Image (cartoon, rainbow, N blue to C red; front, side, top):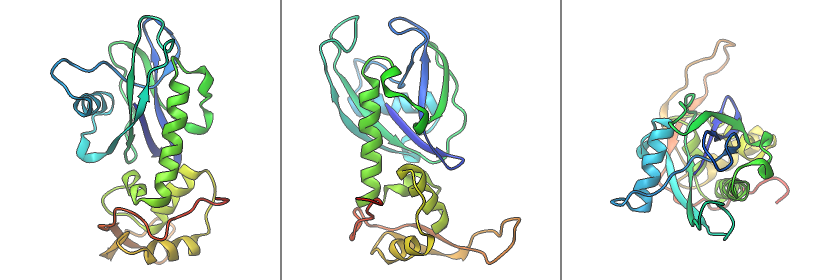
Length: 218
């Protein structure tokens, strides 16, 4: 499972340190086997709740892809179906029974070839899926709360895409995209620095962004 969030303005992924063989002591993505009475989606949601305490209603969950290289697991032939999860700023995770430690790690600090199994490949696919979906869907809102400011949303785009965006241009684009944002009708609380309070928004009913929010350099 590629579980992504933005913590303190940093695009981060949940990684666990394996406590059992194979790859004991190596970092890996969280995951597990599907129960006999489960379908794939149910198993993914179960793992999400176990790793983070977050229920499906509080996160975006989608299937990422299947991985079945013949040598990906030295124990046996294993085909994995990876899931991608976006969620707002999440609390510190708690290690499971078979993990030594678990932590949110900045995506920029992860070296894919050091992860267990083929998880570097899975993580790379998940990161690119997240970055591309922010271009043409409103899923950036999955990284913020139910109500948010345009600046909150811009910080998500900047964290996930890895670069600064022009505030005025961003505001014009997101507020001018049909169905993307809906004004709540009240301002956000004024911060300690004072100033004019920013307007609050919530996610609209759009399922795709037209025009798309293209990444700089795209």
